[in-house]
Length: 136
Image (cartoon, rainbow, N blue to C red; front, side, top):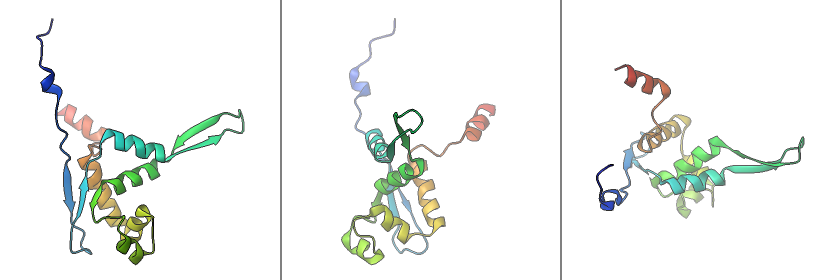
């Protein structure tokens, strides 16, 4: 039988990890934060579409993985404030924080932000990395 442990060992204040990403075209770095599990689940639900299967008539749910990833990235951006009215007005994307981000960035910049976001959220490892770690 295992020794009794203190429940205090499992009561931790979650400290959010953040990261700065400097993109050449912008004088101030973007700041990203990691998301909680509940935030991620909420955003995945937001990216879920329900439609009736014409073959069997049942309603099926499918997650738009691309949209879910984009929504998570937007939620993880602390700076700049993508909901800022002045910023959205400048890019012609009022009420659309994802649209603002897409209007602001080139594809390579978007990819750079996404890569760093994935890293601070623990999504930066691949099966190849795991295989290499086991080999070593």
